[in-house]
Amino acid sequence: MRAAEIRDDLTDILVTEEQILHKLDEIAAQVASDYEGKDLLLVGVLKGAVMVMADFSRALPTPVPMDWMAVSSYGAGTKSSGVVQIRKDLDTDLHGKHVLIVEDIIDSGLTLAWLLENFESRGAASIEVFALLRKPDAAKVEVRSKYVGFDIPNDFVVGYGLDYAEKYRNLRDVAVLAPHVYQD
Ligand code: 5GP
Ligand code: MG
Ligand code: MG
Image (cartoon, rainbow, N blue to C red; front, side):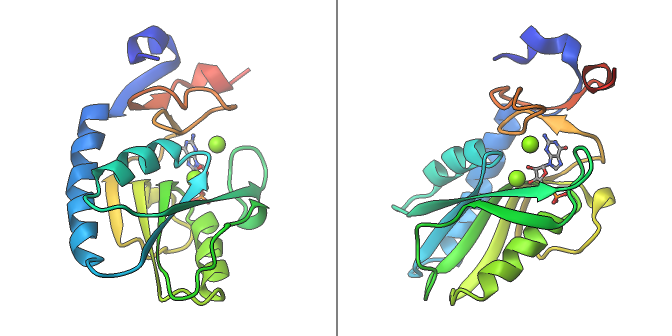
């Protein structure tokens, strides 16, 4: 799906696919150097992190295992409540692993804060976060994210894995969803 095909549903394109891929190369180089000689495990949070995991993992120079977690945050409407339920757990024992959580976006931070606390008890050697996007003005809790791609304004965005009602994940760029799409 090209941005042009759904232009009426979007206002601004905030980050283009080209900018994302360039940034992923930079962060992958940093991660490769930070984790050299370490037992790295990438953990993607379904479904939003699918695109960033696919492109980021392939930007890494060495073979690396990946696992997936699916969680749902219960709350009113599209807002995260911080009450998180595991819908699919990891297949991997985290004992001794250097875990890098790969996330699409940090909004309130509540989901990641919960996930970090949950992972702390599983015996990992270290746990860090890579979030492609972050909304600094939306933070309700501080999440220690070692790697962040782009800070963006506090708007509802879609594309590159991010959905509205399961649509727009396959949009190549990250764009602001036009309010008329979710109003009325
Ligand atoms: P939290 O508020 O707990 O940080 O965000 C939890 C999840 O809500 C994110 O991982 C992401 O999947 C989703 N989310 C947060 N902000 C946005 C947004 O602007 N657009 C979309 N499509 N999803 C979002
Ligand atoms: Mg997510
Ligand atoms: Mg969603």
